[in-house]
Image (cartoon, rainbow, N blue to C red; front, side, top):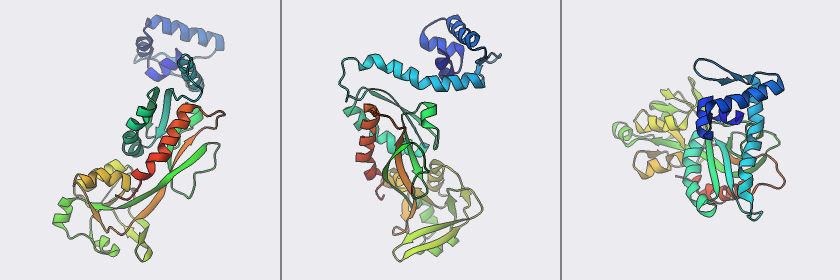
Length: 293
């Protein structure tokens, strides 16, 4: 019940989800507090909030509670059948533009798995927070050293794009240095950014001073579509916009390596079938979504 309070945000919401009276949840939490001799819930006028000990206990208990919930479903199944809640942590754009399109095919193969995708968590502690899988972008050549098991999904490359509206107002750049004469939309906030761009003649550096910048590719994409300037997007983030005619490619033979996409999971022996199945599905299908757009 404490885990339900942590997930639902209040005693009332937890009671509603569990279909029991609020007083039942309250008594259960008080019994734990009395046994441990610590306050787990801070009771306030706007509703209870977990104390630090309460949050630690709930975080540590959550994965075990989830395993207990899945245990009855395992009866009568083969050891290799994928089933149960699959908690996934990833970035917002990766979740929406890479994972979401692949879930229908995954669920068609594994209908007893229940994916739960939490967005905006690039480096959360998977094991401590009770996640089964993470999908992460490493800016360096590899992920930082950790106990996680990592599988490479493919390179994340970005290229230049502009809106048809912007292209109608301004002659699009024909050379890299022409970008200095254009309005630009930047991904990394700041006054200036130097990028190493791969060109047909090798690698060249360009310094851009964006007129508008943001730290989310969804924002950058919409700023480009709105005609605010030339900007860079990952191929997977521009694919649908190109097909819909909302953006056009600028300097089509230029690109930049942003990093590498990995699927990671905590070490486990044996590896849960749901994790093994999801990892295999990503390894099979993600590379095509990372291909040039």
